[in-house]
Length: 120
Image (cartoon, rainbow, N blue to C red; front, side, top):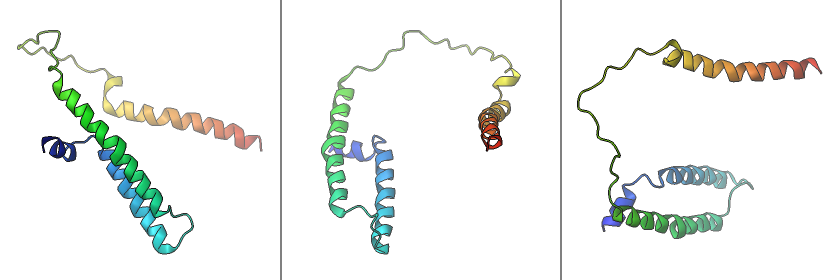
């Protein structure tokens, strides 16, 4: 019982659950519309069988071996007296990082598109 409740309360495959639910709902819409792009129901059952036959047992095995390991001990002792944090430089603040993170890719793509479109 402990492993079952730990599995359903864990984040071990939360991403897989979200992706499968989204995929199933979109596929259900395709079925209703009669689209030829819909995945057959047997394929969805096969994917679920692989998920419950591979991913879930591996999660239990990993939890079993993880709980058997001794806890991690930190290699150094932390000091109880807090140290003063120095003032951040201009480039380490969030706004310049956001601006530079947007300008660099935009500039690269803009220059490439400029030369491509001028050659036409």
